[in-house]
Length: 467
Image 1 (cartoon, rainbow, N blue to C red):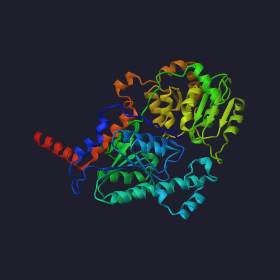
Image 2: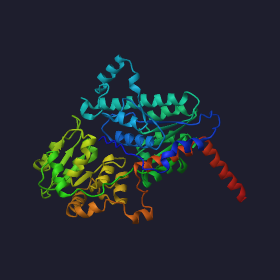
Image 3: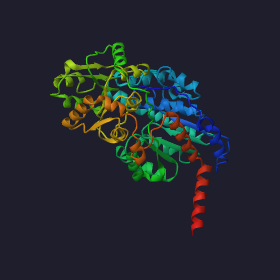
């Protein structure tokens, strides 16, 4: 799923953010005063069809509109015309692989199955190991390139990694520990997902070189225990809602444009189709239910995916009521797709699952049948986006789906964040992309040496005054 929005900043403090940061920075210790700092946003997998490209494109565009003019460092650019769209906002998109000699580009494309400039999707490769090789190699090369930039020159740099902090990535980051750079890592997964790598992250956090950004209270608490509370910031994923839900007459037109039947509700699984996203658990729960609605599986699907979704639907007795589209959904088709369906299923098996689809469900006000685990479950419950269930409990999933279909209009109206949860602090406040950019800008400012030293001096002075 690749969804890159080109939204403007409606005034606010973000418009003068670059000037504010420059003024706040001042001369840094052991770092020549350059009058500014360089922001490098690193997303190696910008040409993938997953959550990464959606988040990277929106964040980089919003930061550029806030006046920061970031460099978006990718392995092979972004999707389609996204590079040009981002550059128009003031974001400098760099392709690391563009510096490869022609023979190396051909060799890498032949081994990985992803030609230079091609889309790194599961369906584009022949064997499973090829997409794994592409992801690992692209990440390693891009992060090493970023660390090389951090070590060159005398200016201060903030490196914001949007790729998972694996052992390989952390080993690359260790190269910049002595460089005048600050590192920000955005992660959507709990510390348990990274095993021994957490120890190295903890060491880097204690050296005040690295800050982790998470999206939910649960992730914040888990990472605070793992690396220390001072190194973790919470910046929730943005959610921008449509002013009204899709009316039935509009839904019929959307379905007609997508060649979908208009004979009842549609429950959809959207995005790259893989077992971890819960399509098997969904069909297990559908056994025995009245077939008065349809199931739509739509998204890029690898050849090796097992069990085959068609076979799973057939075994559950739902082959006649299941529509499978094994194609990537482009950005310009997203509004029509979400307008055509009634419920979106996000029954992720694992607690480290994350999905840009969830933000789109809130934007287009489509109720969610969600896993009760991890970031997805916590956000759905806190923001009233639908009903959660344990994917491993078919009866629980069945009851949740019945509830959503029977009271669909009520859940559509509940997709707006409840004031009660906001007042109780059950979850972080819902932000727009503009606010997300401004919050990140504040974080970058706080990481600057002069701001950190000023904060430490203020804390010491306050401590001395109390003695």
